[in-house]
Length: 421
Image (tube, one colour):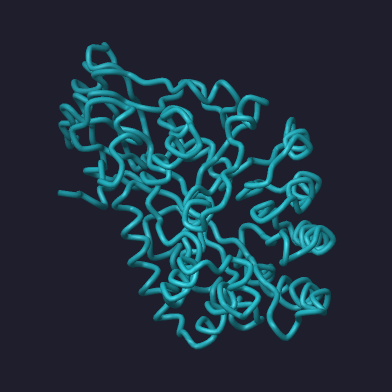
């Protein structure tokens, strides 16, 4: 299949020489082309440039049977990459939402068996078919908002059978959905009630019983640990990350959401692809991240929903660090997979410039998901995962006009999959 998107008002996030990610002050810059075209063949970006270029004239004269999409007044950019979600879950948790409104903290709800443990109980009862059906609906929803790649974690199982069930579901979603999907094994998401006071025994089970089966059945691309106050310690985290490395599974960890936990340093020490949340990040944590290969990933939806402090994103970028953005889509602390809303939150709550937020939601989040060689920018040879916006005036309009869907058409793997009215 061949098609040409022409008369693009502005082509956003183009790269002549693709990079893995952008850092620090470079995040303020996004290369764009006004009055542009993109040519796609067999699901791959074959060419792009200005409408008045000689290349376009030659392309039109030498290419037969090519569909043409007129994008007059519209912008084109790469689809968003959501590098941290818990999108497979058995039911919503709006009753706990009321508890939060009444003043209960995240930790208090967890201590009395709510939160993650609530979802874990329901997960044991849910069938794979039910989980697939509900997750597919969520995947279709996030596609409509412009997401083209998503990482999905287990972690609502917390038993051997339920964790494997979740990962099998994610494997089937990879086959059924046009999205690029990565699976993360998060057996260490919470400590089951029966292991409270003896969590080392549960960590043993994650390492010695769950992980070997996950690896044998090739069910996970990454391994994760919730390293934070009231959850897993640095010692627990390092044991699990080291075990993951032995099976060739790289870490991507929850860190420093609730306190200065040492999780960021543990992630960097063990070569984690990303450390996520980061509300409690100070000079020591920033120093650990500088010159590492670990992507700091901020989840505005969770901090907003839980009324928490916001990660010091400006300080991190001023120190030269990259930042990625993701939704943390889950039923308890961030019940939204809308990356457009996340970009708006990044600008409003974290004072990120629109260009910084777009970089964080595309090329940097692609790195945090391990797919920046294929996705996250418009470059020759990358997958044709593209957003065509509705008619909008400027790039800055994307985060500014929050609460509405600015996406008109989503193209995944070179095929139109969603057209919003």
